[in-house]
Length: 415
Length: 161
Image 1 (tube, rainbow over the protein chains, first blue to last red):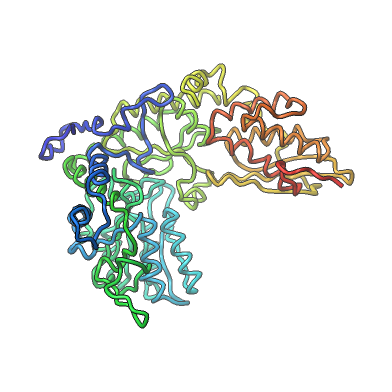
Image 2 (image 1 turned 90 degrees about the horizontal axis):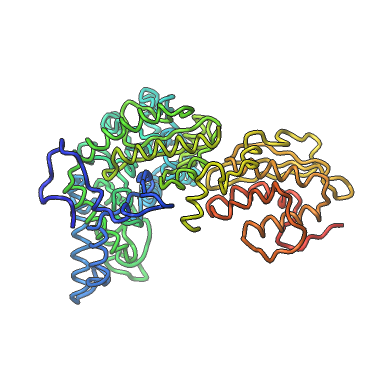
């Protein structure tokens, strides 16, 4: 049974949804699990697990092509999830919701189908210094393929984007601005609305990497006014292998397909093939039906909890986490932007992040360690990596207490 | 790994992974720095974390390791392992060094049937990493660099001229 009532609770009522997540009910290395790695992958509520299980055990069939009952049920559930995704990010049309296997595939799709055919030597793609590798390497590939130049907007010591420097880069040479909504390594929330407004005034198309944006609050792609918005299901309590690319219909319509195969065609002839309508033109092959149905259930769950309540809860916990961490001797916080999501990287004098990670795990505390697929961020701070604690709606103050005392014990071993 | 093993390991006075000898090497690594007279070199990169160790060897005409030094960044396990490695292989012939490599890898694989001389105490202290599968790569980083630098993989027959 879910702990949630049918209608969202007011934002000032303390969030207590831990019991909805079966993975959090276990002991790890003899201690109750404290899961502080949701920015890498979030745990799934029972309702998501049930939705996937129901489909697998009752409705499994291929989508879109069958006339039999199971195929109809599978298609209804799958397309129903697409409708929920559309509403969740306030896209104008379901044609604008392309289902992918993750943020990475969504960004590669835009790089290869939208940018590559229209860019050449002398043109530029602009990103920032705080991007995840998934929002760096696809653009490097396009630059290698076309001779275009990748230009990087700088960040400051707090891990904030230098927006003046970014704006100074925006001119007629720029054919794509690709920027993270929230930095996975630093937690920084970028002012995407302002940035989109500015880019739009130059006629520059914008892609937002929303992998870390969607889990922490409401996202409205029309209010942001971006051209593309990419995110993953598994960071917002859905299954892995699911992702979304929102794209403006006019842009998607003009783009060539990303991959060829079944489902993305209307008619195949050896003398010419007619592509399917949006969004199916970009969805070659049998999709991750179970995963997408699970993602739909995850959105239902998040909406029942309430995105505002989640944001309020996470902001409160982040404040506690940051102040408690700053009190630990030898700890230096990495990523102290004014506007932050509930992600905190840190380093410890004389102790490598990996050793911290192992010693915390022994005490039942799961954090991420390393470069977080953002090696340029580590290069900027001149560190090999960080340990990172990330909070989600199911974390609480007890988790922070356990984490800080486990960290203190870990550091003691090295002193 | 069993829960009880790791819970016991969390006790600071008897840590399975971070034994005192390992921590000593991690805090003050031996043979750390450049080796201008190096004849053989290889970098070990741990893709898990991006850590990089540069191993430098001076090998004489008789295929004996005269000196071994390393530089780089890494966790306590990879630094301690490189420190102990460079201590242990200095003065050995390449054939002997590859023999130590084989026995070290066998220990980390939990291969108790391995034959040959027992490993030196400092190397045995790294045996605790067996219980931490995600950290085995840290312990073997410098060793793979050594194998690569001498163009011999430890799991293949060693041939010397």
